Amino acid sequence: MSEKLEGNILVTGTNRGIGLELVKQLAESTGEEAHIYACCRAPEGTRAEALRDLTTQYPGKITLIKLDMSDEDSISAAVQAVSEQIGAGGLNLLINNAAINKPDIPAPLSATGKRDMMDVYETNVVGPFLIAKMLLPLLQRAAEINSPAKGDKMSCRRSAIINISTLVSSIEKCPETFDIAQMYPYRTSKTALNMLTRCQAEDFKRHNILVTAIHPGWVRTEMGGEQAPLTTHDSVHGMLYVMPFLSNKDCGILLDWQGNRIPW
Image (cartoon, rainbow, N blue to C red; front, top):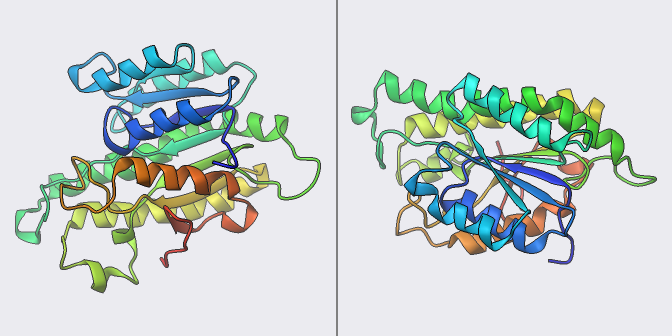
């Protein structure tokens, strides 16, 4: 990577898949002063073993934080824990990666109920809304500390929120993707996340905080399935190549993992 992310970086949903790979590649690629806050529901659980191994492999670089994105009290406690450790440093980058998909793919209309819709919305939309709201003072602090002498005011190395979205959130492209998997709860929640991205972009630009949504590609994970063409390594490598180059012009839009714009 010719450009690197730096500073304090918080990633949600890090015990497996894309989130775990984000922590791994961030730990590998960032400098000595960078610190990664890796959040997941059960840092001490069996499903977080690979994440704990990374903390051993990169001592002092990663802090594990307990975080359930469907629980407001858990989000508040996680933000408090991060705030106490960061102190006056500010938060440079929030990557909202945690998400759920219910019911199982292809999630047709016949198998989908109200509870599925509400559970997915709560985690995929309300969670990112709350954590960004609570972390806003830390993001503002980072933006103030790292004010550039010239050029674009917004960047992921200064202060930014990256909401991990998806191609299937695109209303315009729905006719092209719907037959693959209906996924009513997941699709509609990610479309709502896109609107959250637009709202935050408009609201936070006065603080010089960049807000962008990124589609990681169809990735071979527990959620993406074995038929997915992309590995987590290639997806994350692409996203981490794109992120350092994001600037004012990219605020409030949806990009793919290679930096190409996706229509709403």
